[in-house]
Image (tube, rainbow, N blue to C red):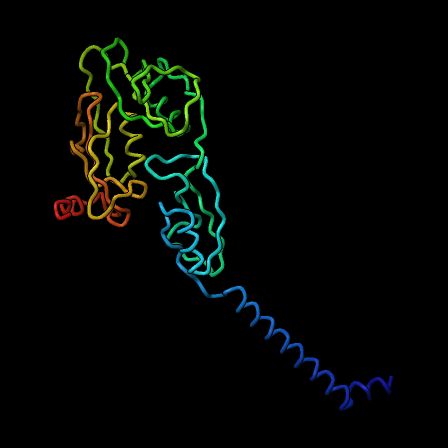
Length: 274
């Protein structure tokens, strides 16, 4: 026991322990330094806005910022956008991410999938429009037809004006016209408040109220309806305002940054400045 105590307090043992502590500290410091430099700790970049870009251009943009990518072919077709163009990214544009982060890219399908036309006969127009939307079908307009019923889909016509049949396969993105019952009394419907809604949601809301979207006017330099919101409508929304079923509503669209305060009167009053 005495020899062990002498060894523990000997100069040789103390030097050995001190050297081990120094080596351990250096190892930890070097490891942390290596992790920081290789993982890009505290190095962040902003995800660029690559919507509507061709895939190759989007890839080059991401790589120039030190980001990696994975392309995912979307199952939802977006009309008016070239096949293969970027429709979404995750994380979304302008997000702050670490250098080297993988960005998932969703593209407009190169091959359009086909889906059976949902059952629509004598169904409420709001129900039919939601079913069409899930298949990527596009409702161009509603044609109100005098009938004993109200708001029921009577017939659906394709882009050539031909009568369609339920459960027949159509490519996603196909355009249709819905003939909807309007009663026999020149029915009036309430004009919904569309302020601040995205263009897509505004069209859905109009369809649910048996109304059509009319002219689309872009404010400033905005020309992309995907990220645009409704800044103004004509007729302008008023509480309890009614218009004829099947009427068209013109939409003024603005970018997200402009549309942040759409509900304020000051924002609406400045529309004429664009």
